[in-house]
Every structure is written in C-alpha cells, then in structure tokens.
Length: 270
Image (cartoon, rainbow, N blue to C red; front, side, top):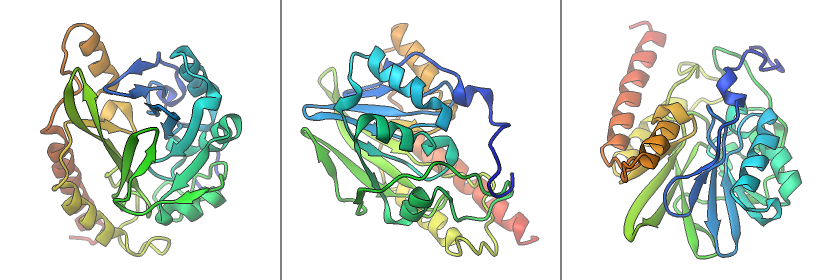
C-alpha cells in the first residue's frame, strides 16, 4: 500500500469479534480474533496493552464491559509498536477512557503523527495520531495498583518496538509473562532503509536481548502466533497449563532470527 493508503484488504479476522477471556493472573484478552489487546487488572484500575485496528474500538470496549469492568477504570494505555494493526484503535480508546498513554522514545513520533517511519514493501499505512503522555525508559517498571509492568525495548520491527514483562500468580504459582512485540521482518526494508537506518543493528540487539529473557507465558500481538485463543479453549477444557511453555520464547526468537538472516541476505543479493 502506498502512503496514505486505506488498509482495505486487511485480513477479516483482524476485525472479527471474539469473546474476551482470562489468560493468567490479572491478565485478560480483550482483542479481536486476529489482533490481541490485553487488559491487566490492578487495585488502582486497569492497564490496556494495544488496541487493534481502528474498527476494533467498539469491540474492545464491549469486551471490557463483558468482563464486568468499566471503561473509566482504564487508567493507563501501553502499546507494543506503532503499526496500524495494533494501535489504530488507541486514539479512540484513549478518548473514551480518559486513560494516559505511555510510549517508548523510539516510537513516540510515529504515535503522535500517525505515521511509522520505516520503509517497507507495502508502503506506509497511517493511523489516527495519539498524544503520548509519558515516555518510557528501558527496564524501568511502570506500576499501577501494585502491579509492575517492565518495558523491554526490542527495537527492529519498529524503531520503538516494546515488549512488556510482568510476574503474575496463577493458582499460587508465580509465572513470568512476556507480552512480545513483533520480532519478524514483515516487509521492512533492511538494506538502505532511509526512514530507519539502524534497523539491522536493532534487530540483532533484540535477538541477543531476548535470548536472556525468561518467559513462562508468551503473549503475542497476533493471536495466531502462539495460538492464544486455542490455548484458552484447551485451558477451559481442562489443560491447566495451556498457556505455560517456557521453551516457546527461545523457539520464536530462533525462528525469527533465521528468517531475518535469510531476508537480509536476499536484499544484499547473496
């Protein structure tokens, strides 16, 4: 798609509603069938991570209500990265909830202009701009109502891609959860990217960083990446640890790095 293009050919599942559900600890899924949005309950209100496409605003709001929460209880909004499919709904959700929005420094300009800078093979897909109320620092926790979420800067997919780490308790068992920002190439131009000249180095640093991160539960932005909805069905059918898979993050990182290396070599003509 070219600059200013309308994302008219997006996958249907990105805007298809699905029932909200409990994941682990204080975390709930309130996204669509194809694009995740995660709600974190605290004693002082709710934290929402990502929102989905612009058309998902009423769907996410309905899911929050179906879980018994009020929109005004959403006090803080966070995001993984400034791409249309994950954050086009943020402006509308921020308007309707009155929540503050926090961003990494790397993606702040993209959020506030509605335009991601990286050159891609599909052009630029804009999204509604949103004011950033707080700029994050890598590894410095954001705390609300006794729940701390730690931003893990995993730049590459975008200049400010941010994963979120938190420790939760599920049936008296502590679990390390990582809401994983995308680590795929997904159309990014790797060689001669004028909008994002440091893209290759950022991907390399992200792969190295994530190899040292422990995660019992990995929650992606695209639900099918780790079959989030399918895992919920398995859990509801009696598989108590359906979301728990400590080997999943290393596998995802290895697969992404292999695909990145292949894409880079192809662009370099090797």
